[in-house]
Length: 362
Image 1 (tube, one colour):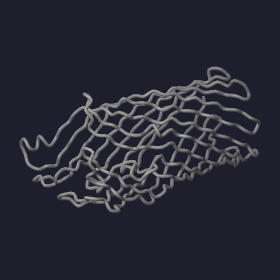
Image 2 (image 1 turned 120 degrees about the vertical axis):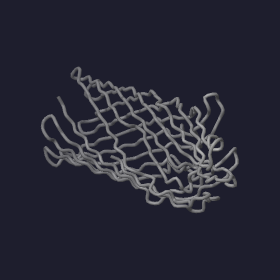
Image 3 (image 1 turned 60 degrees about the vertical axis):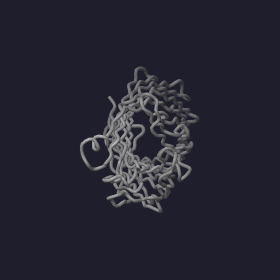
Image 4 (image 1 turned 90 degrees about the vertical axis):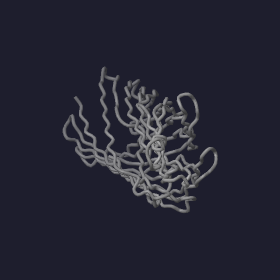
């Protein structure tokens, strides 16, 4: 379960007025989501395994109030990725084990953004919006890993997961809140088929080390590089090729470093704890969007494993993520001309993750 808190505070947004409506800071844009996972593995020989994992890989849902002062830079976004990962692993010898998998990912995205129009139009509330929602799209990637048993007490792991390209197609709905009826009202709503160019997920490369200090203590460390620079912009075009909009992100590659430990209390209980620093791919305030207000963050995690029987165990974990304060200086453009600049900040954004996992061997 993931619970997030995202609260924006205006700090000088230009042309903030919403005709017939009072602009707000958008309220609580976070929320709670359940993220189920499932894993199965089968030993077909003493040193050979087949397996499959199913679960989300990337996801996000951010939703501000409709009178959000930054609505023209986005006030709703939802990203859902469900990944199916069949895999194969083999123990080559006492020092080396290898694994290989294929990832099949189903993606669904939705986005809502305000459209600034001339408030002089009679009845125009300037709460017009675009709603873009995709059909289901599939991407294919791969993952590969190796585990080295350097000594009886030291293990080193290396893993790479490739990025994916998605052919996103769906519908764009334009909705105007102009009052009236007849032809004027009919003209205020339009729907057309669109496609998105540039929708990619990043690859990542991870290194992990485990050092056993005693029968009770084990130290852990990991370092992960993520290729976020593939995510530069998202271009919306009609199916005939006419460009409708281009959303810039300009992400940069990031590093994540983590340190932790396991402590075996007795034959039934094992406790875990760790800390990690995770870089944000957003380097400039002008590239930070309302619906992805990411920033550098620190993870603090605790967990425990309880052995129920010879064939069953239960894992419980909790992480609190502290986000660094972030600022936005986001330009809203119409036909290449800046019509608004959303300026503000997010203070004390946070996320809490609670996980429960049941393990059973047959």
